[in-house]
Length: 607
Image (cartoon, rainbow, N blue to C red; front, side):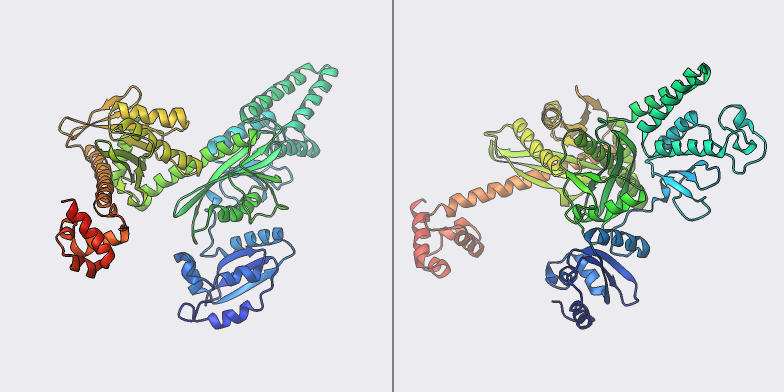
């Protein structure tokens, strides 16, 4: 348990902890001003809340900051874990606690609104609530306005409904061109109009099957009454709806009603994509960014975000498809399908592609607006994007280089540049494990396979551009591994050097093409910096390994002398040569008589 040096209110908090029950529920941490700074849920409130105040040294820096600011604790006991989940979601939205990770404000996303009026309208809006928005039922959010406008246009061709702000008493031009039934003038009954609105509502919810059946039944009824022109118009509507559904259906219609949620995260942010799927059709899909507050795991973030998304989108799904199980999500709230197969696997892969794209967009935007990359660096990255015809800005560039001495002590190094700057936390060293002799191509293939297989298996984001320190041959090796073996889509470029070992040209494409650069070009300097950095990093690692190898043969090969004794000798005398000129008495004083005699005899007998 922590003491008063960490939290001066700990005595009162300890007393409060003794009264907390061992039931499921929701807890709130409050600061000295009575403001809610964190909301959480727990199967066992007593155990969970007490855990904040024990093993303090093992906590992350952000949790330590939270603990130092807790003044009081408030708990609410509920009947079940599902109740705790829903109450937590409502309290987070109500109090906006400082230390809770939350979805960004969704008001920038577009929605479709069916107004709550006597004769409802279908409106495009970017505000979900508040302000002067009309009351009604919101559908969305949608990923962008283009998709929403397309859906709105389809509905407009299928059904007649009013769009006017106020209803007059005479038919307007919309009625004359067949877009409105003119309920204002009594040319369409309210019952018939509301039936039209109900059909629109079903399309927005993805219930195509029932609407299709109703339209076909009306078509056949009109044909039986020999109202052939009206029947033909109904047939065109059916064909339009079938065409839209076929373009929207991505998997078999056996996937009736599910939510698909994927997540990617880094040290500071998590990115979540949610797709609503009905009868194999994606009703809508949108992504959101979450700023981490307490170093939460992906599972912890999903346990908070999924109920929020479920409520925000008014989802009717009872199943959620995920990359991994989420233990804090009660089974009686949603059935989890983790690591799915078949059609559900295809949907999850599609969701992952969406969230990867969204992550890159957010990073690019942040680089431009928050200074993660200097404006000059962003311009250089944009030039690389145009020159290599990359799909996204190469905010994260990785580069590999090999190093060995005639095949001995083979290693490789990888550096990452983020926003045009070295990102040393992401540098990686590789010991070559499977290659015998000086084979740079095989060594490059090994480390690239190991690097990107691991990233792919762990669901980590891939780089925006891979640069190999070499020409066409090294590029082809990288392509075979990434595209043919791993089936990944990572753009590949090569940096070739001239006969004086200076950066000479940038290569891209298969077969490779040369991007002409002048030595005075700032872009040339950036690429040269990347190449020099990866070469320095790989060489340094190789020298360290070679040095350790020399150390082992000189001293640790002596029977009875282990690494610690050898290290102590080198630390004391500075080198093997200096050890060899010491007297037996000096060595005995340093490491004891038995080991001293072994070292002395070995070094002097081998001179």
